[in-house]
Length: 79
Ligand SMILES: [Zn+2]
Image 1 (cartoon, helix red, strand yellow):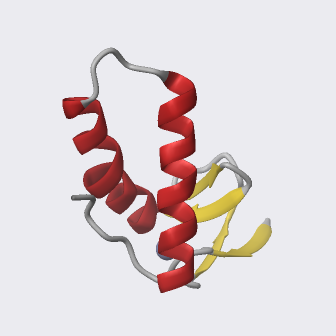
Image 2 (cartoon, helix red, strand yellow):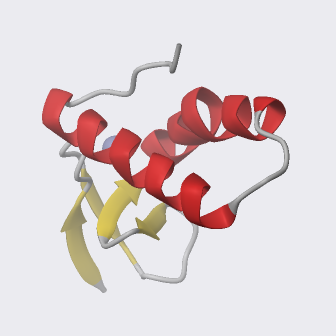
């Protein structure tokens, strides 16, 4: 068992690492709720609008969005 806190909402995530409910993205720890919010507000709109898909650019955008969410304590939909 590993005890962690979500970097965005600061909720405790106490679960085994490879169990669902814990996500490690770009050196950050996310709970399932925050991960799903990231997918919905950040990842999907990008995938829908950005052609051709560029992984480096996408990865940087996800990191930036995550840092912003961590600073604010919540996710914001991209414009
Ligand atoms: Zn969270």
